[in-house]
Amino acid sequence: MTSNLQILDDFPVKIRIPVAWGEMDSYNHVNNTVYFKYFESAQIKYFESLDTFKNLRENGFGAVVHKISCTYMIPLVYPDSIQVGARITEITSEELSFEFFILSEKTGLSAFGESIMVMYDFKNAQKVKVPTTLIEAINKIEKTKF
Image 1 (cartoon, rainbow, N blue to C red):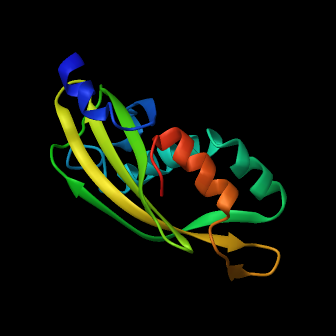
Image 2 (cartoon, helix red, strand yellow; image 1 turned 30 degrees about the vertical axis):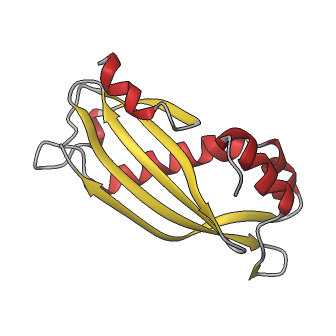
């Protein structure tokens, strides 16, 4: 499986998640909705890796999902564990574009997805621009310049 995990080398954030029996549906594979929970877990880990994001949250700012998609390749089944990679592919004035890969430890690439997050001011209930401090923190972990 080591060669398959190399697919995630360019993802600055990776998490390992065991597939739970209860995530399977009547078709005997992980239900499609669960993949979005996997993406969310990796995305939360990504934000937690940014010290700046914690400060933003404490001041009432955050990122909320604007759009999300998943392309399913190979079904996941219990028992298994997956690696989920998360990375930012684009930043605009108000949006962060994420890309996710899900790799089964048994079968390799299972799914990939994308999400667009908008920055949101919860105190004033409105979208806001992506703060420069957040962009700088993302540039550090992505080793690039957005």
